[in-house]
Length: 309
Length: 309
Image 1 (cartoon, rainbow over the protein chains, first blue to last red):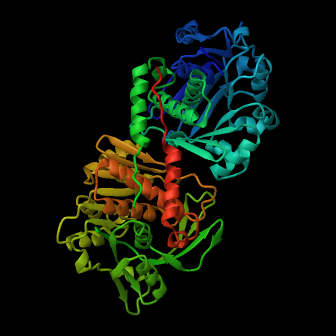
Image 2 (tube, each protein chain N blue to C red; image 1 turned 120 degrees about the horizontal axis):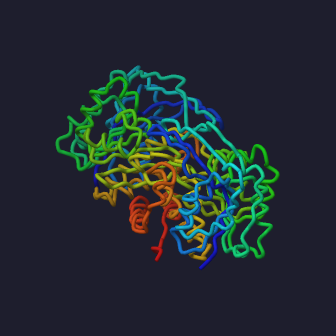
Image 3 (cartoon, helix red, strand yellow; image 1 turned 135 degrees about the horizontal axis):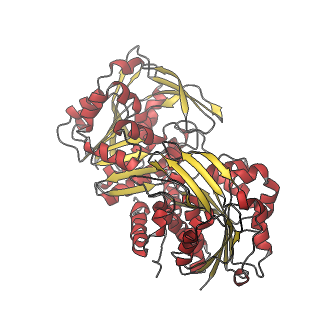
């Protein structure tokens, strides 16, 4: 079974949407990535840090999904990273109400010995120096390195971000971030510029408008599944990344054709994530649910045109 | 050969985009619809009105595309409808600089005798009473009636719009308009509400984010083709409608499966429309261009997943 190494936050979130409001609940990029990747036959591990205020039951939840959590450092008398945000009525924009870095401020990632030869590495959204440190600890070149990042690092750690971008295969980034990073408005041109910075594959996430995969002159597009109700978008991008990297780790085939499938699986899993608050929907998602939705994605996108003559 | 009856404006446009600015050029919904539909084997006619300031060469251009223009009334000493607009930097929003209704103010559409038994009727964006008048002149029920409309009529002629909606099969409308008409933010719910108002098929256009087709519990999505440069979005929605209705008029098959193909053809033709100012790209578009782009749409959307087991 292939190994998937996941680096990212394991955290507390407090979320407000037009539909309700949560207390501190389980959150974090690595959490969502791990839950999504657990739908594939891979051996996965999370590298992260929490405080000793982090409930044992949350760690157990990850373990129950067969995720190796030996790389999650628990800092004694430390407080876990906390993010709080409020989504606006359209759920497409949000404001951050509170961010407490806590133990994340001094995070030194330590890759478990058994995962230094990981087949696929998923670098969740974190300071680029942490992402670089993880790559430096590997004892062999992974088959695939996927990086997720955000505008915050473009604003305050652009040089470091550019360094890590030279060492990855795939970047996942949203449309506004792609425009900021490239200085190009057209996403086709933006992908070209970002490609020149390192990654052979550029995935541009457009939220409810789907995701684009660029590689050389090839482009593939996966829509988001049109849903009656989107309850909470938190974690959808990380879930997408987890489905994408988990599927590729399982299948060992990193051709463009198979990356299309990975994008579809990422979109598939993300469409569940938004149906309930936080990780709730992802905790109890069955293989049957996912396969049934795959059928919906086919209905949504596949056509059989005969050329007009 | 099946008959396609097109009703809509034939007009002058003056357009400003970040890439340039035009004088008065050929425009109008029926113009774009007609040019797009001319790519299919159908007998088409336009019902519209212009003033005698309208250049003969523009009418000739439509005739050269085998469009019957006997239903375009030329008002002596009348002035042609004129619209002027400026697109913002993202090309997704625009402001109207000038609208001169001119001869359109007293337009009484007259359907040519030979098209009173049209197979497909494409009601372009106009006052709902004009759309109703056209339907009233038909001598037999068309196989398919497609309606395009806009928020302006929802604001000032909602009752009339609801009347015409009871007599059509397909409505094409953009996402914001669908939300306004239905009072629902979710496009899935919006389509359900609009469906209850009459049309069995609801097409929601999302501009650069593609188009959705709803019918009962079925949904189909066609992306817009990602382009390096979008030059001028004017007429893209009408071109989409022309490709959609033209394809369906040609193929005589109005199953959901074939409507998917019509949506793809509409998106295909619209992707050309935006490449140059006004109608320029559509005037010289070859069958080969369209077929080649169809291949691009397949590459963009089709995948072949094997179920994970």
